[in-house]
Amino acid sequence: MKLLITGGAGFIGSAVVRLAVSRGHQVVNLDALTYAACLDNVASVADDPRYAFEHADIRDRATLDRIFAVHQPDAVMHLAAESHVDRSIDGPEDFIETNITGTYNMLEAARSFWIAQGKPAHFRFHHISTDEVFGSLPADPAVKFTEDTPYDPRSPYSASKAASDHLVRAWHETYGLPVVLTNCSNNYGPYHFPEKLVPVIILNALAGKPLPIYGDGSNIRDWLYVEDHADALLLVLEKGALGRSYNIGGENERTNLELVRTLCEILDVLRPKPEGAYSDQITFVTDRPGHDARYAIDPSRICAELGWRPSVTVEEGLRRTVRWYLENEAWWRPLQERAGVGQRLGTKA
Image (cartoon, rainbow, N blue to C red; front, side, top):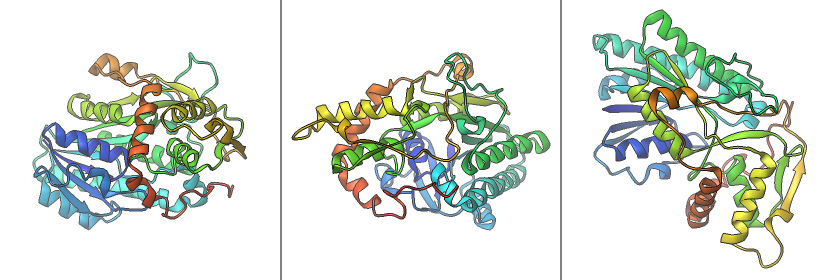
């Protein structure tokens, strides 16, 4: 199968690219190479004859039409998006243009190509989204996001992703475009851009800097190892029912404080400090505006219908992640010089 993967130089997208190529798929990686992208993420497959790269922006419709015509993909996996909540608070315009207008352009380019090809039955447009579109959950562990949970986005980022989800469903219902959708919980793992919580904690700890935790650290997230997520995404593409959405979660709920303490304990073992513990660096900072209290996904549908389950516990996944960062300073060190990395963002509200 030939896959057109947007955002394939990003964190999740690159995991999908690497896995797809390893499974024998042909992959066209379309990426604008904005600040959070890094072609080093796909260096392991860059010389594979099944891999091709297109430096392009999903806001450029004419270029998208050219890419579809040249590469003639069997399926689209649409991951390209602006994704950092704090950055969306400071600068929402990029999120509206990329996540909404860019998705519209992708849908129209895909629809035009699909029609020109005679509407082949095998074609798929897989839209990858987030659990943040559902808003915030109460502390009750019995209550989780399902595919039927009403949308209630709270940030410019989640609102833009909610809008893109609605566009994809509308293009299926109105035009018959064969789509599948997924909404995932918080990803972590190797190649995670160093502005998100897990890499921030690891790299600040190693540098002897404060480990910032928003508010009192009680916000709860469901953590999904990125390679588990990539496996689920390819499964949904290949076997998911048309027009159907699937929630993908790691079944690993932790408070932010619990997660940070676990990272500190792993670092204490793998890279012990001369004195003291890494948890001594924990610092509580002013909370993010509109910070959702809890996210938790019920993955029953993808488990029952497609037979998928997460394979990595958060403790094992965090150990793998810490080891990867300890062994790959040459990857993350240059990224720390990019705009905004290491600065507190999202305080303008």
